Amino acid sequence: MSYRRNNPDKRFSIGKKTSHVTTYARDDEHPERTIRRFLKKCKKERVIERSREYDYYEKPSVKRARAKARRKALIEKANRENQNK
Image (cartoon, rainbow, N blue to C red; front, side):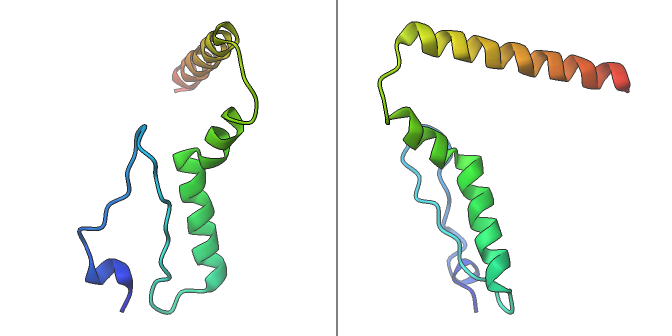
Protein backbone atom coordinates (compact mmCIF):
# COMPACT_ATOMS: atom_id res chain seq x y z
CA MET A 1 0.00 0.00 0.00
CA SER A 2 1.33 3.41 -0.83
CA TYR A 3 1.34 6.29 1.62
CA ARG A 4 -0.78 8.42 -0.70
CA ARG A 5 -3.67 5.96 -0.68
CA ASN A 6 -3.62 5.68 3.08
CA ASN A 7 -3.62 9.46 3.57
CA PRO A 8 -5.67 11.08 0.79
CA ASP A 9 -5.83 14.36 2.72
CA LYS A 10 -2.07 14.92 2.21
CA ARG A 11 -1.77 18.02 0.01
CA PHE A 12 1.10 19.83 -1.66
CA SER A 13 1.23 23.57 -1.25
CA ILE A 14 1.39 25.82 -4.28
CA GLY A 15 2.09 29.47 -3.85
CA LYS A 16 4.41 31.57 -1.75
CA LYS A 17 4.36 29.21 1.20
CA THR A 18 7.34 26.99 1.81
CA SER A 19 6.77 23.75 0.02
CA HIS A 20 8.15 20.42 1.06
CA VAL A 21 8.19 18.41 -2.11
CA THR A 22 7.70 14.75 -1.31
CA THR A 23 7.17 11.78 -3.53
CA TYR A 24 6.19 8.33 -2.39
CA ALA A 25 6.87 5.21 -4.42
CA ARG A 26 3.71 3.70 -5.80
CA ASP A 27 3.00 -0.01 -5.70
CA ASP A 28 5.19 -1.93 -8.17
CA GLU A 29 6.80 1.29 -9.45
CA HIS A 30 10.36 1.42 -10.69
CA PRO A 31 12.61 3.68 -8.53
CA GLU A 32 13.73 5.72 -11.55
CA ARG A 33 10.14 6.65 -12.29
CA THR A 34 9.71 7.85 -8.71
CA ILE A 35 12.82 10.00 -9.09
CA ARG A 36 11.45 11.44 -12.35
CA ARG A 37 8.17 12.34 -10.64
CA PHE A 38 10.12 14.01 -7.83
CA LEU A 39 12.19 16.07 -10.28
CA LYS A 40 9.05 17.10 -12.14
CA LYS A 41 7.45 18.29 -8.89
CA CYS A 42 10.61 20.22 -7.99
CA LYS A 43 10.51 21.91 -11.39
CA LYS A 44 6.83 22.76 -11.00
CA GLU A 45 7.40 24.23 -7.54
CA ARG A 46 10.45 26.16 -8.87
CA VAL A 47 12.63 24.90 -6.01
CA ILE A 48 15.94 25.45 -7.83
CA GLU A 49 14.98 28.87 -9.15
CA ARG A 50 13.93 30.09 -5.71
CA SER A 51 17.17 28.89 -4.16
CA ARG A 52 19.16 30.70 -6.84
CA GLU A 53 17.28 33.93 -6.11
CA TYR A 54 18.82 33.96 -2.65
CA ASP A 55 22.38 33.30 -3.84
CA TYR A 56 23.08 36.96 -4.53
CA TYR A 57 21.33 40.30 -4.23
CA GLU A 58 19.50 41.58 -7.27
CA LYS A 59 18.35 45.15 -7.58
CA PRO A 60 14.58 45.63 -7.74
CA SER A 61 14.88 47.38 -11.11
CA VAL A 62 16.69 44.35 -12.55
CA LYS A 63 13.99 42.05 -11.16
CA ARG A 64 11.27 44.17 -12.76
CA ALA A 65 13.10 44.23 -16.10
CA ARG A 66 13.52 40.44 -16.05
CA ALA A 67 9.86 39.93 -15.16
CA LYS A 68 8.80 42.31 -17.94
CA ALA A 69 10.93 40.44 -20.49
CA ARG A 70 9.47 37.13 -19.32
CA ARG A 71 5.90 38.43 -19.67
CA LYS A 72 6.67 39.74 -23.13
CA ALA A 73 8.12 36.38 -24.20
CA LEU A 74 5.07 34.52 -22.89
CA ILE A 75 2.69 36.85 -24.75
CA GLU A 76 4.67 36.43 -27.98
CA LYS A 77 4.64 32.66 -27.57
CA ALA A 78 0.87 32.65 -27.01
CA ASN A 79 0.36 34.85 -30.08
CA ARG A 80 2.48 32.49 -32.23
CA GLU A 81 0.49 29.48 -31.01
CA ASN A 82 -2.81 31.23 -31.76
CA GLN A 83 -1.67 32.14 -35.27
CA ASN A 84 -0.73 28.52 -36.01
CA LYS A 85 -4.24 27.28 -35.11
